[in-house]
Length: 139
Image (tube, rainbow, N blue to C red; front, side, top):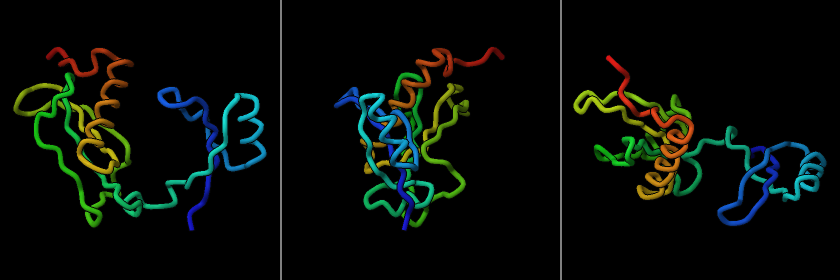
């Protein structure tokens, strides 16, 4: 049986966000009251393997600066889950053929479209933090 964690949330729809997570209900309720949020109980994901969640699979999405997928993405089946990769995570690298800097995003998603959406949001965050993240370094 996996452990539960209490998440303090606020907002609705596109403004919905997680403020923080704690293990103690009393602390969660104090934070939620002070921050005008709510308390939700969820499974602590480090205690379960993501592949055990029905319909969720690990995906590796390759994406360039403009959001294009330079080659077909792929997913690992439930029996091919790579425990050496942290999900979600990403890395930037130089493609050997095009010379462009690309991102590979390691995503947990229900299907291809969902995985591409999550990777695109990650790309947007990277560019918001560093607009030159995908630029070629001077050789």
